[in-house]
Image (cartoon, rainbow, N blue to C red; front, side, top):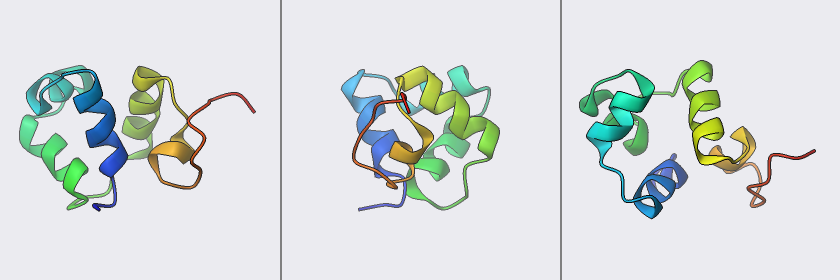
Length: 72
């Protein structure tokens, strides 16, 4: 499993392409693909955008919890 497998799974659950996610995050498909593969670290501001977009916590995206809820 890649370091950021959950962002891929969440994207696929919404039937979105990497290109579309790149557009949503204001980056290229290639950069987004690198995020999913864990080839480059995801900047904090992008992690927050991803968490907000998918309505999950950043900790969930980073595999620090299995609970996707954003509530504390």
